[in-house]
Length: 190
Image 1: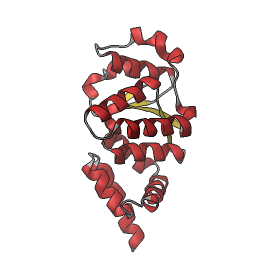
Image 2: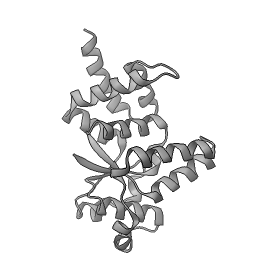
Image 3: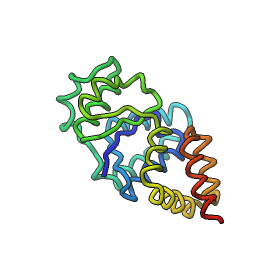
């Protein structure tokens, strides 16, 4: 199973975060995380008033509990931080954690923050979520469709069909992926 490191900015909106974690639950990939990543996410989500502090803390606590095996401890990557390119300390920690955790990709909306050439020498691609998910559905179409169908079936507030969930994901910034996904659900209807 491929390991990926998902940058904090991909964890907004929640539909993309939910999909990335659901794909981990279904053993499609493994999303790696660090305490630094979760702390950054909590700070941003509260500062931008997308969630109150208590709600954000519950979400990160759930990630710690249900995805404990995906954690990359600071002791595993701290020595690599100084070797990472760039000026942003958070990004350098993320790159070091991705390298220490054996990630094949860093998934981010800010590709410029993660210099692709030095990371490629470590076997890590830098890719945006739409591109990554589009490649994944081509490689594993049935598995991805099954995960999205399972996610949709679990939605209660509000209830969602797979098409509703695809629409939500398209609005969240992964339109190419959802176009491919919708084709599979349209084929299932026939």
